[in-house]
Image (tube, rainbow, N blue to C red; front, side, top):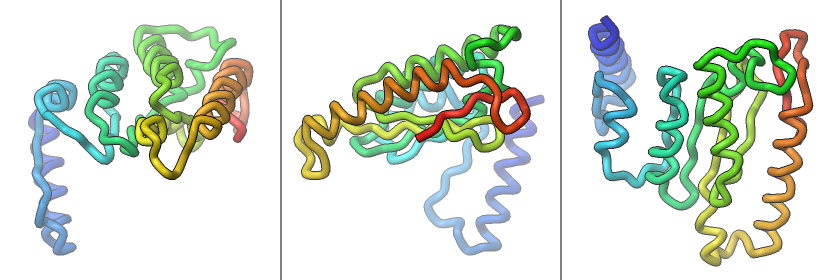
Length: 173
């Protein structure tokens, strides 16, 4: 089953890291990623999400709460074959979950999020809470500007159907 596959993949990763002399500091875990993240205290510098698409909303909620200030959350398949953009006629449960995930992340004031239209879409969100707390790299004007850009980007994402000739939505920044 799935966990046997994960154990095999963890073994392959362990072997590749050993051969590249990178094995120090890695922990290889073959289990449900959502349950694992729920049990881990954090904070994390980077969280990469490519779990079962139905679990995307829960994974995002867990991840954002466990990012360190300045941390980054990355989710693969954010465009989900172009099905999440407005105008799509396909709305299955996984499409709805990926769309809910994306919309929730874009609505978070503490994040600066964007979707890269590479492959099937890669959502990247930076926790900018350090700027809100007076970090020297940003101030209130910077936050207002970024929020305005983020809102404009959400409007473009909803409105832009197509691109790349494959029915995928795009964001232009």
